[in-house]
Length: 411
Ligand code: C6P
Image (tube, rainbow, N blue to C red):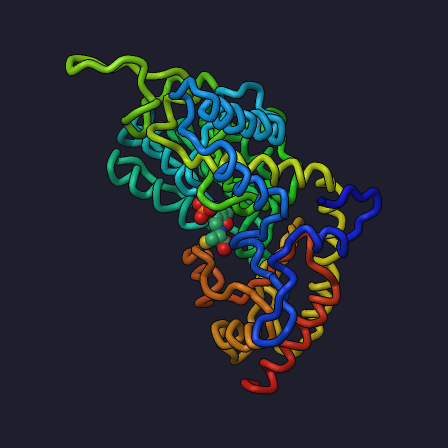
């Protein structure tokens, strides 16, 4: 059973994540790779087993009892997601394979429907490749132009420069809410309002933000919002695309196949209503069914309490790591979530990752799928420690000890 805490009880929370209770190379696991993917609490794991043991069936098709149960559980997740991000209508919640597929869906469908030669799309310098490459592909196909919002050395976007890029040619702004490599929280509400003043639509990449911040797509007034289940304590292989209903209605379908149609003949096919118009084929039923358990778990612990706790970890980690001679934190934005990217003078990030692993500590090293951002800082990559609700200050102490060991070996 998972915790229902009034005060933040990290020890109790850790009991809900069985994977944490193991040793790696003889040392207790310290999992600091949460920005890549988070671990799963027991209710999520149990929901997966319950589905396969109790009601595995295809959805929206059968009239038998198992099919109806599977459909109801799948659609219940849609409602849980709707509430979680405060979307106005269930039709606005499209299930995909992940944030990447959600962005590609918009690039393909919105792109075919609304982008033409001479149009402009704006992104920022800190985007994940998932929010760069689909737009580059679209611009190439359509003869449109991609523009990039510059950032400061601290890792904040420069709003005045963004304003200069906006014009009546701007069709879409695609911006990351929280940077996976720097931890920066972008002022997306301002970005959205400025774009709307020019009649442009805005896609927010919420892959890293959704697990840390309260998300209200109606208050943000974004046109699209995307994220992945696996970064928010849910299973892999499930993503969400939120889109404003009138926009989704106006967009052509993404993939063709079963489920997304109303009637098919060789002469003419009519398409299904939202959200099914964008959900061709049998979806990832089991993982989608289990996804709502992750959101419910998070809501029960309380996002505010988790956010405050993670902030404590960020402050503690920043202070402790800053004390290590030769260590430089990349990303010192005004507002950050609990991600610390760093470099140690003279030591390759890969060596840092390998030695930390021998200490049982998992961090991510490399360019984090943000190569243009790394080029901006003139570096090949970083080591990144990203903290989640189950991490502790003692684990940060272990990281500091591990880094001292790295320095002894390579320094
Ligand atoms: N970032 C990281 O270690 P997918 O792979 O589709 O679930 O998410 C893609 C994605 C999009 N935007 C941002 C801001 C992201 O951080 C990610 C995934 C992981 O930082 C894997 S590269």
